Image (cartoon, rainbow, N blue to C red; front, side, top):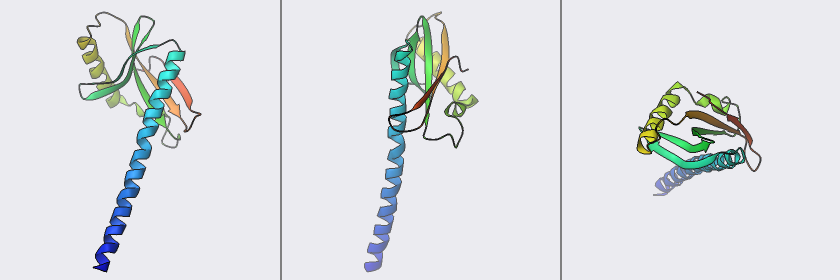
Length: 138
């Protein structure tokens, strides 16, 4: 009986440790998206949608920059050890975003409006983020 309690304690401790590590990443992404939204608003963008999902993809932010409809991918990284945040938007991610953007354009009857894809790359943690806006990224 005593051995099984020890195993359960070790197992539950590992499970709790895993859950804590998992939840550490969720707030970072949410913080990054909020920081990106504030940054875009300061740049004159008007946010029209958040976390739009369609065609098996998600677009973090949809905004208007003047008369241009902009689909924005936000990438947040604690460090650049795995590369710059914008490098994570590979060809596969770009293709998924294009499909979702097409679905957005059809659903909201965008018509012939000019469209583009931007990336907001955020590095760091805490109240001081390094934010870079890559206009017309792909």
